[in-house]
Image 1: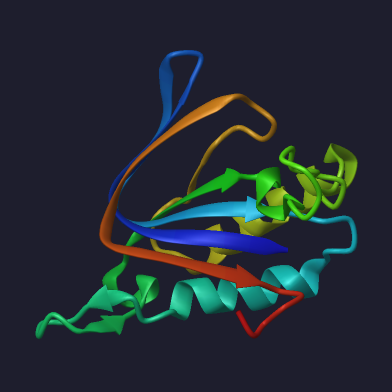
Image 2: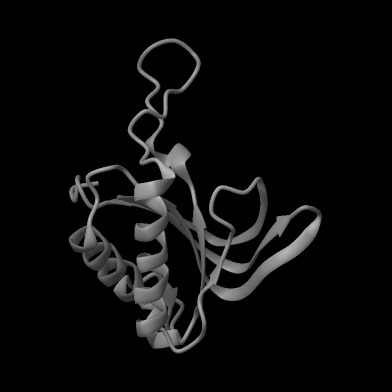
Length: 151
Protein backbone atom coordinates (compact mmCIF):
# COMPACT_ATOMS: atom_id res chain seq x y z
CA UNK A 1 0.00 0.00 0.00
CA UNK A 2 1.34 3.36 -0.97
CA UNK A 3 0.21 6.86 -0.03
CA UNK A 4 1.19 10.31 -1.13
CA UNK A 5 0.24 12.82 1.54
CA UNK A 6 0.11 16.55 1.03
CA UNK A 7 -0.32 19.12 3.76
CA UNK A 8 -3.05 21.42 2.49
CA UNK A 9 -4.77 24.62 3.50
CA UNK A 10 -7.64 23.58 1.20
CA UNK A 11 -8.47 20.58 -1.01
CA UNK A 12 -11.55 19.42 -2.87
CA UNK A 13 -12.78 16.71 -5.21
CA UNK A 14 -15.05 17.48 -8.14
CA UNK A 15 -16.98 14.71 -9.91
CA UNK A 16 -19.22 15.39 -12.91
CA UNK A 17 -18.64 19.15 -12.47
CA UNK A 18 -20.04 19.04 -8.90
CA UNK A 19 -18.05 19.38 -5.71
CA UNK A 20 -18.13 16.05 -3.90
CA UNK A 21 -15.79 16.75 -0.96
CA UNK A 22 -13.92 19.67 0.54
CA UNK A 23 -11.51 20.16 3.45
CA UNK A 24 -9.42 22.91 4.97
CA UNK A 25 -6.26 22.70 7.08
CA UNK A 26 -5.25 19.08 6.96
CA UNK A 27 -4.01 16.30 4.73
CA UNK A 28 -4.90 15.19 1.23
CA UNK A 29 -4.10 11.48 1.08
CA UNK A 30 -3.76 9.72 -2.27
CA UNK A 31 -4.08 5.97 -1.63
CA UNK A 32 -2.78 3.24 -3.96
CA UNK A 33 -3.51 -0.42 -3.23
CA UNK A 34 -1.87 -3.60 -4.54
CA UNK A 35 -3.23 -7.16 -4.43
CA UNK A 36 -1.21 -8.35 -1.43
CA UNK A 37 -2.09 -5.40 0.83
CA UNK A 38 -3.92 -6.17 4.06
CA UNK A 39 -5.07 -4.75 7.40
CA UNK A 40 -1.49 -4.62 8.71
CA UNK A 41 -0.53 -2.28 5.87
CA UNK A 42 -3.50 -0.08 6.72
CA UNK A 43 -2.66 0.07 10.43
CA UNK A 44 1.00 0.96 9.79
CA UNK A 45 0.19 3.68 7.27
CA UNK A 46 -2.59 5.28 9.28
CA UNK A 47 -0.43 5.37 12.41
CA UNK A 48 2.33 7.11 10.43
CA UNK A 49 -0.04 9.55 8.71
CA UNK A 50 -2.00 10.80 11.72
CA UNK A 51 1.08 11.06 13.96
CA UNK A 52 3.54 12.54 11.45
CA UNK A 53 4.78 15.86 12.79
CA UNK A 54 4.39 18.05 9.70
CA UNK A 55 2.22 20.88 11.03
CA UNK A 56 3.72 24.02 12.51
CA UNK A 57 3.84 24.67 16.23
CA UNK A 58 3.68 28.16 17.77
CA UNK A 59 7.29 28.76 16.73
CA UNK A 60 6.69 27.88 13.08
CA UNK A 61 8.48 24.54 13.38
CA UNK A 62 6.92 21.39 11.91
CA UNK A 63 6.34 19.72 15.25
CA UNK A 64 2.62 18.88 15.41
CA UNK A 65 0.62 16.00 13.99
CA UNK A 66 -2.76 15.90 12.30
CA UNK A 67 -4.19 14.54 15.56
CA UNK A 68 -2.68 17.37 17.60
CA UNK A 69 -4.12 20.09 15.40
CA UNK A 70 -7.48 18.30 14.96
CA UNK A 71 -6.96 18.65 11.22
CA UNK A 72 -9.07 17.34 8.37
CA UNK A 73 -8.36 14.51 5.95
CA UNK A 74 -9.43 13.90 2.35
CA UNK A 75 -8.69 10.42 0.97
CA UNK A 76 -8.61 9.82 -2.79
CA UNK A 77 -8.03 6.42 -4.43
CA UNK A 78 -5.03 6.61 -6.76
CA UNK A 79 -4.02 3.42 -8.58
CA UNK A 80 -1.40 5.37 -10.58
CA UNK A 81 0.81 5.53 -7.48
CA UNK A 82 1.88 2.01 -8.47
CA UNK A 83 2.85 2.94 -12.03
CA UNK A 84 5.83 1.10 -13.48
CA UNK A 85 7.82 3.28 -15.87
CA UNK A 86 10.93 1.21 -16.58
CA UNK A 87 10.00 0.26 -20.14
CA UNK A 88 8.91 2.74 -22.78
CA UNK A 89 6.90 5.87 -22.20
CA UNK A 90 3.54 4.40 -21.29
CA UNK A 91 3.26 3.54 -17.57
CA UNK A 92 2.06 0.08 -16.63
CA UNK A 93 -0.36 -0.35 -13.74
CA UNK A 94 -0.33 -4.13 -13.46
CA UNK A 95 0.55 -3.99 -9.75
CA UNK A 96 -2.57 -2.02 -8.81
CA UNK A 97 -5.21 -4.20 -7.20
CA UNK A 98 -8.43 -4.81 -9.09
CA UNK A 99 -11.56 -3.28 -7.53
CA UNK A 100 -12.72 -6.54 -5.90
CA UNK A 101 -9.62 -6.34 -3.68
CA UNK A 102 -9.04 -2.58 -3.59
CA UNK A 103 -12.54 -1.35 -2.68
CA UNK A 104 -12.83 -3.28 0.63
CA UNK A 105 -9.31 -2.19 1.63
CA UNK A 106 -10.04 1.41 0.65
CA UNK A 107 -13.23 1.35 2.71
CA UNK A 108 -11.40 -0.16 5.69
CA UNK A 109 -8.71 2.54 5.42
CA UNK A 110 -11.37 5.25 5.48
CA UNK A 111 -13.21 3.58 8.39
CA UNK A 112 -10.02 3.30 10.48
CA UNK A 113 -9.16 6.96 9.82
CA UNK A 114 -12.66 7.98 10.88
CA UNK A 115 -12.22 6.05 14.14
CA UNK A 116 -9.05 8.00 14.99
CA UNK A 117 -9.77 11.52 13.83
CA UNK A 118 -12.02 14.03 15.59
CA UNK A 119 -13.52 15.31 12.31
CA UNK A 120 -15.21 13.16 9.65
CA UNK A 121 -12.92 12.00 6.87
CA UNK A 122 -13.86 13.20 3.40
CA UNK A 123 -13.32 10.98 0.33
CA UNK A 124 -13.33 10.94 -3.40
CA UNK A 125 -15.36 8.33 -5.27
CA UNK A 126 -13.48 5.09 -5.88
CA UNK A 127 -12.92 4.55 -9.61
CA UNK A 128 -14.50 7.84 -10.67
CA UNK A 129 -12.91 10.40 -12.96
CA UNK A 130 -12.17 13.12 -10.41
CA UNK A 131 -10.73 16.59 -10.47
CA UNK A 132 -8.67 17.09 -7.34
CA UNK A 133 -7.97 20.70 -6.43
CA UNK A 134 -5.56 21.60 -3.67
CA UNK A 135 -3.51 24.33 -2.12
CA UNK A 136 -0.38 22.53 -0.90
CA UNK A 137 0.74 24.34 2.25
CA UNK A 138 4.51 24.57 2.54
CA UNK A 139 4.68 22.79 0.15
CA UNK A 140 4.81 19.55 2.10
CA UNK A 141 4.48 16.29 0.13
CA UNK A 142 5.53 12.91 1.53
CA UNK A 143 5.41 9.38 0.08
CA UNK A 144 4.88 6.37 2.36
CA UNK A 145 4.94 2.73 1.28
CA UNK A 146 4.00 -0.10 3.64
CA UNK A 147 6.16 -2.53 1.64
CA UNK A 148 9.19 -0.20 1.53
CA UNK A 149 9.32 1.58 4.88
CA UNK A 150 12.70 3.16 4.07
CA UNK A 151 11.36 5.79 1.67
